[in-house]
Length: 330
Image 1 (cartoon, rainbow, N blue to C red):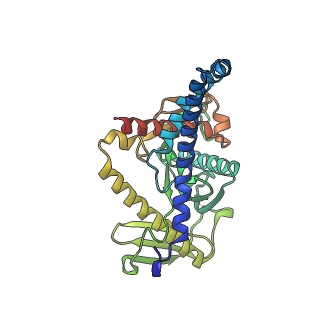
Image 2 (image 1 turned 30 degrees about the horizontal axis):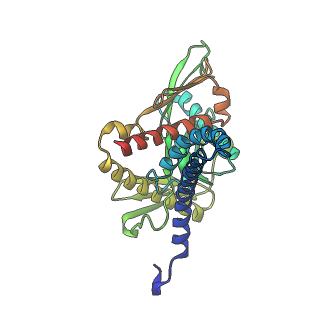
Image 3 (image 1 turned 45 degrees about the vertical axis):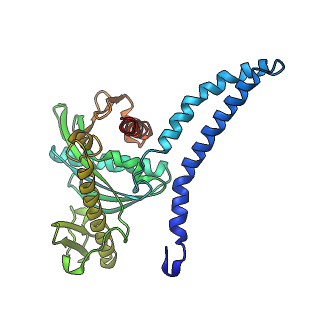
């Protein structure tokens, strides 16, 4: 309730939006049950019996799907699913090849975002000497962004012959991806005394990547030790970006803390986005992608690297929903 007893229209609108799909599924399920009951009653009418016998198999066949859809609509929702997301990509083991692969992942997510009509904004990008990524922080905004990208968090492993390798040997390297729901002002309040803000000269990798301004901003959150930087050309914009990234990381840390406390066992937690877990392997010589969490293997790696991720993401969401259903039934 807002001040003076007025109803907060935005809150009501969100509640309505959240509940509408559930109500629609309930109505559809009840409607189907009613149709089945009517058709069964028609069996007793000699004139209507033949028609009822034709309709009943189809109606009964639709019932399990309606029950499943209703169950899915009643599953607990992640309140952050509809939020924009921040993607942080960093090279792991593998040196220059890992940095190049991190750049490939960045472009993969950019293409996927563009295909879905999402806004893809690079907030921070540090380029390696060979054109790979030392670190990238991206904001993605659009419909159900976090809901579809949150299962991308973890270690992505690549197996291929590096461009820098003259002997043609296959190397294994990795990059880490963290997908965080963007924090809103109401989520995290930061005490000005808890942060230290430093302005410094931005550093590039040479050539076109050099930033000659003194506008880079580094914010240190003293209680948590979290450090964020932003090196756009506008110092004011850098402060905004760095504060938003800091709020998002603190919000994510709080979500992880609550999640850890609720987790009944470690296995469930690891399976839902532990960022130290190897989640996927990209094997270029065989054109094969394997998601280790659900045992999914696809031989369409070229298409995946061009942003064709829906088949993988849909399978991960279905697996997650299946686990939630099992917990409800158990």
